[in-house]
Length: 250
Image 1 (tube, helix red, strand yellow):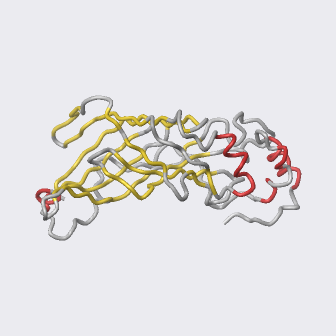
Image 2: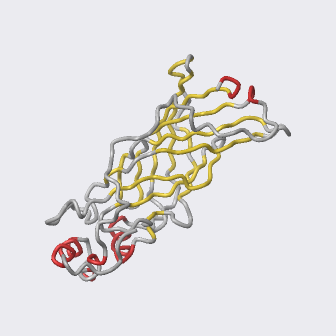
Image 3: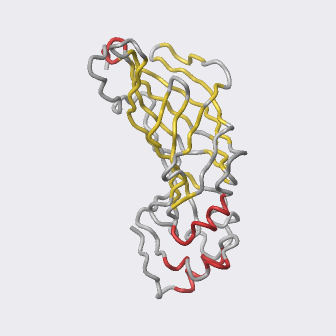
């Protein structure tokens, strides 16, 4: 966890970081409360798993027929506009299972999600200005929000914000995740039959983005920099591919 005791040994560095934040004149004495967090992760281009990796396929519900259930693995690099932030996220891989339940209704079981941090252009200040740009960098990492319905295209995400000046728990959607209701942009296309590989595009321009929370003294200026909360003007475009395998062939 980040150190919440004032770092008196490096006041000038903390002061420069605080002053560089947009509208952060009031934060001159606050940014120094945080030393670089041990939970900060350097942005990477991708850590999404292979689209043919079925190791995250979840166990089936009791009584489910493996011959009628399939495990789906889909990968996408979404383009996200949320408040003032505009980023192309590092590839996301999601795995889930679906098929008929013993009573004949449609069933789904969540598997896992993998992604990596993506740098937010402009960093904490919005302009990349300052004498210590590494200290002012900002990255965003999507995480599963606990809800999904792949029959209807609904799922929820949280977005962890990473920076040397932010505590580990700084997140958009901490208590109430961002809910997406994706709409298809066109018909699906079969890229390959064996192995099965299907391509599709979807988008959501109706979701609301909550404010970032648990970001320490920088919570208010960070939300002002990112334009959060944002009830409208948000957009996620989702160009994805997915494959599947029946459970009796796993």
